[in-house]
Image 1: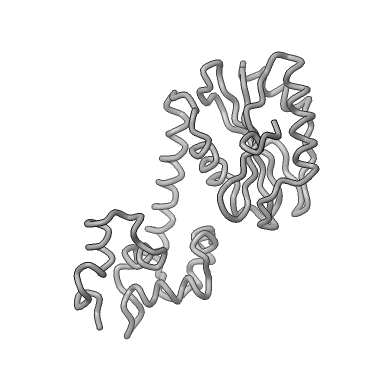
Image 2: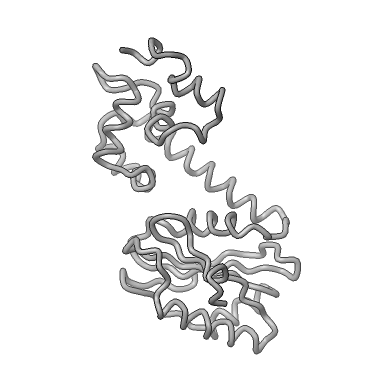
Length: 224
């Protein structure tokens, strides 16, 4: 049965319009993007197969254009569209932090770090520099490591903070292993950074860990 023959309440587009995008499954959202399925299949079936073999959705969306080109149902036009949509979402999220608004929502900060760091094959330690009103000044990837870790130098973080005339910082790093639990080393680095920054009257507001699942805030855990 073709999608247009489904009950109206079950068609992805109609469901999105009547109930909002949050009501759709990953496969239904991807099906709307695909528009049509492989020969003999509807778009939802093709989307489900893509996710089953190459998913979950996050992993599929992290594929490079070259990797996407090898997947069934994704020709050059769809690959360009998908890459452009992802870049638009990245720029929208970046604009939220760059338009001068005070950063008071930990979830937004977590999403921003996730967008910048998730999917990397090695560990990356990044810093978001803030002014006295906790508005974003700059975002820098400062230290890169292997799959196992990145060596963090508090003195260099302090130097860059002073160069940006920052008043506060939020740091974050990814776990390529996918394990979202902060390690003992993560907590040690956080304490060292907090102490080093305090010497020059700078505040460390949070340390975000990016892995599988939602970002983890060390401040929310009471570890800051």
